Image (tube, rainbow over all chains, first blue to last red; front, side, top):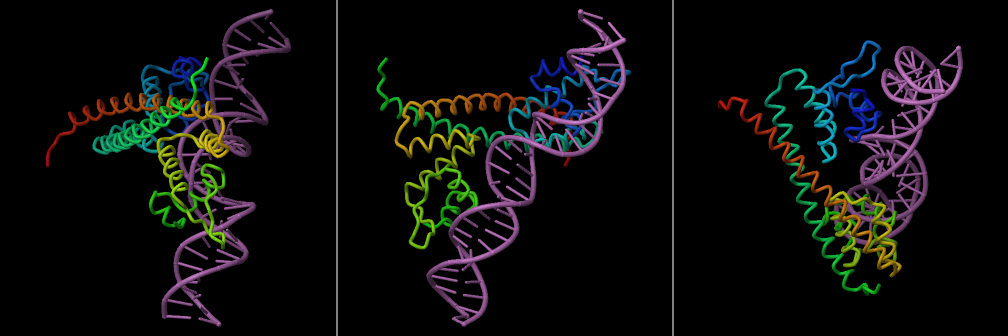
Length: 119
Length: 119
DNA sequence: TCTTGACTTAAAGTAAACTTAAGCTGATAC
DNA sequence: GTATCAGCTTAAGTTTACTTTAAGTCAAGA
């Protein structure tokens, strides 16, 4: 799979894919003889994982550490700790989101009451 | 209320409070004769609102527009639209969070199975 | 009176996460 | 065969949201 196809499939620009690989957020992608990236299933799996994490707001730094550990096939405990830590953050974020959505609901209701619904 | 007290109360630095006011995220705070900010209830209400929105990830730009409209006492429809738009974003974000948390749950479970629980 | 600490402004600096630019190569379309 | 298109790298630029710095004012305690 070319970088263009992967970009299409996961909704990340080719620039972002190369950037992720360069900083180690994704392990090195296999290349064809001419040096062009040829994404296999494993690489796609990484892209998919990182895309999911990033769109939830997980920071790049801990992900880089996690990916490096998996690559080196070590730090099982540490890997689990990283995941636990990130889950904690996301749970807190979900709480905050809930609070704010409720506030918005309340405010929007208020506007619905005071805006005359003609038309 | 001084800026220091407000900072304490809402967990925002004094720098951030001044920054928010400067860019119009919070309407001008009343001052004492000597120019020192003296937050009243209204100002505190704005701080509280902005703090809530920002910690859920609502962007500064739409908030600035909203605050300006409230200040000018106009744009009722537009104000409601801004709130609706932001709520949509937060709901989408909540969905993504849920997906990612589930992925993390799954992965963490996996680590719990393969890490020998000695100790 | 001196100094400490909280406050003021404007402007420059920082961090995270991309994004763009510059200057290439190599394969395909006309 | 030449143009165009996807891909390559390195390095510099951009955006968002603060943060820090510099240079000052002012009130209260030692």
